[in-house]
Amino acid sequence: MKKTIFRILKWICIIILIPILYVVGSLIHGTVTDFQPEEVIPLSIDQQQENTVVTDSILSFTLWNVGYGGLGAKSNFFYDNGGFLTDKGKMVRSPKEYVEEYVGGAAKTIDQFDSDFYLLQEVDFDSKRSYHINQYEKYKEVLPGYASTFAVNYKSQRVPLPVLQPWKVMGKMTSGLGTYSKYTPTKATRYQLPGEYDWPTKIFQLDRCAAFHRYGLPNGKELVVVNVHNSAYDKGGKLKKMQMDYLKEKFQTEYQKGNYLVIGGDWNQRPFGVDPKSFGGATLNGEPGKMIPENFLPPSWTWAFDPKIPTNRALKDKFQKGETPVNLIDFFLLSPNMELVEIFGTNLEFAYSDHQPVTIKVKFK
Image (cartoon, rainbow, N blue to C red; front, side, top):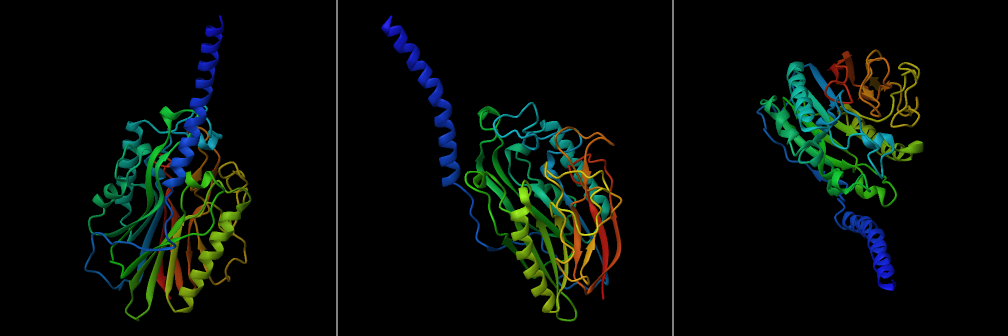
């Protein structure tokens, strides 16, 4: 009888200890292998073109968070449903056929714009969640005459979420910002944005960054094109404020040099001037939608967005037109020496991503 009781207690201890050891081991592994990029990293320039000086008077730009090929209209996402421990019946990864459809659809859409510059966010390079499809290369295929760079902002050997479902975890992650242009930049640099989450969350979150690209101009100055992706899941906006203050200083320094700036990306906050009720007062990642303050920059700077087209949708469920909460968080910022000629969002009904493209045409003043 005693032996039987001992065996039962032993197996109870084993059953309890295995999950604990798994979680502890995942945290130790994540901490040891945590990607910790330097603040300034030069970027290699692929597919370099002969056009090294921008001579056109009017330029077109398209930005788009392509949602790593996994967040199209038929998908939801476990983390937006609070699925830290379990998936709560939501998708950790979209089915492979969905991912292939989303990536293929995004590539065709990009090809149709014929813009001079493309600023893409959440481009997976080698990630389990997107079945290791090299999306950076996929988009290069439809933009063969474009120079390009890739700035990593999410790199992990293993993201162990959801914690209590190790057979479903997000796994290996390599993702970042893909920038493509008809002109070859003289220099491209990745800048690490300041601020980080508390441990252990920080070891499995994105390392947010901005990619600066410099292009020569006939007047000896530079066109500086910036691809940016600010923090999400940032309750209270602490990280966003640190990042925006850092970026503001860099933007103003460039402008004071006489350079021309076009900044675009997924800011994870509304631009000043967007009515929070425009799209039903939707929240971002379950948080109240933060807006960039009116006095963030002098009024001579231009926040460029299309107020009629939402750029982001909630991921708690699959997309349902008229029911799914939507918002506007993807847009451009222009320095005072750039003039906005045209801007329009493209309504794809979130077919290929949880974000939608925004295109502008600008000219030098």
